[in-house]
Amino acid sequence: MKVTSRSLIMTGAMAAATAVVLAGCAPAEPEAPQFEGSLTVWVDADRAGVLEDIAAQFEEERGVTVELVTKEFGAIRDDFITQAPTGNGPDIIVGAHDWLGKLVQNGVVAPLELGDKAAEFQDVAITAMSYEGTNYGLPYSVENIAMIRNADIVAEAPATFDDLIAAGQAAVAEGSAEYPFLVGLDPNAADPYHLYPLQASFGAPVFEITADGTYNPSVLALGNEGGEAFAVKLAEWGAAGILNTNISGDIAREEFVAGKSPFYLTGPWNIPAIKEAGINYAIEAIPSAGGETASPFVGVQGFFVSARSENQLAATEFLVNYIGTEAVQTALYEVGGRAPALLSAFEAAKSNADVAAFGEVGANGNPMPNVPAMDVVWSDWGSTEVAIINGQGDPVELWRAMVASIQSKIDG
Image 1: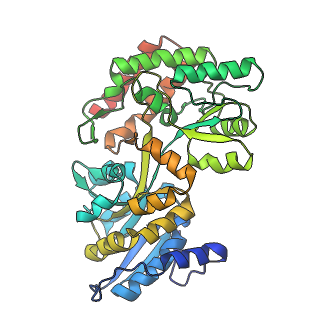
Image 2: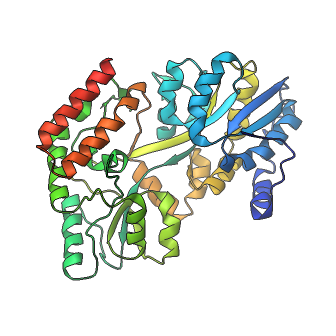
Image 3: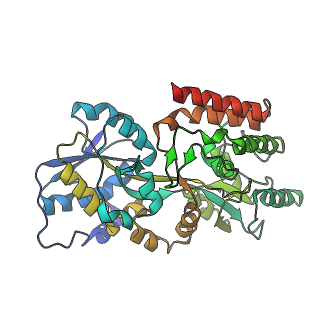
């Protein structure tokens, strides 16, 4: 664990760009409120540089020292749950929205009052940062997957997933491609995250989605008739070689950038490699396989305030009126590549055609479930998809056994 301070030296163009972007982003009130004490923030290395400058500004204008502690992103949630109750944890953490249910369940995060500020963020970001009707986080980024099409192989976007497969198979038959479609899968866990939009198009979300877009964890909706119909399709796609559990995420990317497939289901993190390879690509909505919208999961990242913080007012001020500004959200986007959650920053970022395209697809998505019950879903879900794709049993029977196993774990 590495502790950074305001004296962190930022080098090169990132330092210059961040300094310009953050200039003048402070609240305009002539008599800014003053606070006391200090704040400790756990942050990953990618975000530390941007926060270093804004932390210095906060200390100068609000009188509160902000100590940044750099940690591996994947370790933050569990370390926070362990340390917060002892009083030795941080005041603020950066994190993913789907951690929220477990954080609330363990009593380690405090509600965050956004007031009118909430309307300045993308709706999906606010929904993601809310749990049982209460907001707990300041969102800063959103991301989702989409369908990437090699326009030199297939000239037009297919209307349905069946049309996509037909176009891909035709490209293979004529020798312009080796794979009709690519998506990275794991031989033991498949990839429920990437396959979820296809499942959702059969009307089978993981949990029941309520009218306000949140989840009802008491209803395991993937066990409905739509889920079973999706299982049948998984078996068909596996038998036809459309889905292949031997094609990992790395292999799928390598084969697509080599021009070997017209279609690739992936996220913005692989766009740099696609660009570098000179692929003539288009980012498009995921075609429906089951008749309903193929809604991808939307992932949101943001900041949470510790329920054990002794300086919650200052922490709220730091998040809402500093991290929540267009300048800082834009700087975080420029460093991390994820689309901003703040609407004004997102609109500016949409001058990048890739950001705009992924954002359009994500507008029809749903936040990944942030309920604690989700923790017990992934393992059975992934291993069952592998079994079905590889023809290791009747798909409906395998799916029903998966649902029963997940439900028993939820019930305890």
